[in-house]
Image (tube, rainbow, N blue to C red; front, side, top):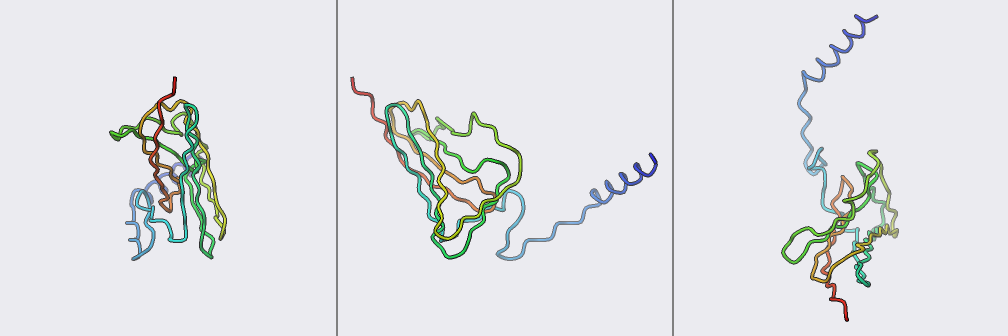
Length: 157
């Protein structure tokens, strides 16, 4: 029995190592790996709303399917969105997902015509200053991003 298992394992390894070259992507088709992201369809409308409060900023990232066909978003984990903030010099100062963990499981969401996905995040201790926030959907098959400029005023005495 042990010989059969070793022989089967060796055959499987040889098949993987012998490696056929992956088929090239067809013109206009999707590729694999990091190059799989493509520009969002024209029918996707995005917005990133930032509401500045007393020392905090509430973000709402919206993605709306304004077209007539469903749009499928594929994900490599349980994370569906992210928001990051940089200062006026371009230095990262806050990242919503920095203290989060996400299930490592493939998933997808279908955005029907006229439907909107809304994701919320809060930066609880935002100091006074000028910032640029980037909200993005973490889909692997389409790139969806929106930025907004934010001004957090100094607290009045």
